[in-house]
Amino acid sequence: ETGVTQTPRHLVMGMTNKKSLKCEQHLGHNAMYWYKQSAKKPLELMFVYSLEERVENNSVPSRFSPECPNSSHLFLHLHTLQPEDSALYLCASSQESFQMNTEAFFGQGTRLTVV
Amino acid sequence: AQKITQTQPGMFVQEKEAVTLDCTYDTSDQSYGLFWYKQPSSGEMIFLIYQGSYDEQNATEGRYSLNFQKARKSANLVISASQLGDSAMYFCAMREGQMDSNYQLIWGAGTKLIIKP
Image 1 (tube, rainbow over the protein chains, first blue to last red):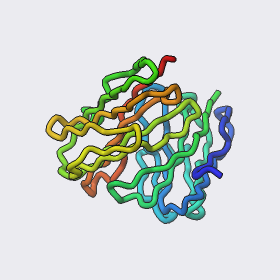
Image 2 (image 1 turned 135 degrees about the vertical axis):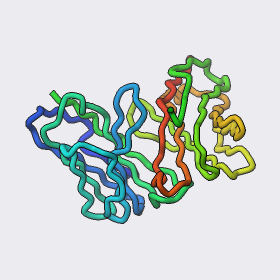
Image 3 (image 1 turned 180 degrees about the vertical axis):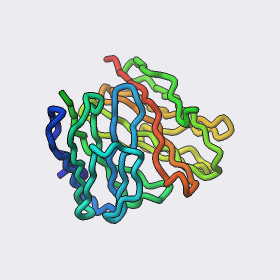
């Protein structure tokens, strides 16, 4: 069983659809993250949750709505997306969010295409 | 200004040769951490190696080592005896020590490494 699991792996949605991305970690970590990876751009941190509380929201449009019901699960709810939102969405977890040397463990990502 | 610069968008290396991937960073913090990750075509980011700014020795993890030159603000990744499975994107990242940074990882744009048989 992999440490961080993301579903679905691929998603195609229309601009009027509502969908959700799911992330689950089996590592006992306290912090979880959503990142957006667009072609030829550095990874963009979207949201950080520490002990199920959101600690960071990097000016992400409201059409992206995160949810962290417990320390093992993280969702990203999507609605009325734009074609420029097409990207690879990566979920990650780490032991703590505020520790210098803590590495993050990533899922395989959801490849999202908005048509 | 970019905080993490990876100047090599792509590299081709012959199998079994050593390869150096460049990373320079920009920070005014005295305390910071540097990370390297590998991203194969399957998508997940795989942690490779970490170097703390106060670490006196260069970090090593198996075939990976980090050539840390603090005065030059560079943290190059060295892969010895490259293998076909090393073909992937490689990302350098930094975490600064100031509280107002919220300890976020700042990422470079990546280097695509292709190992030739």
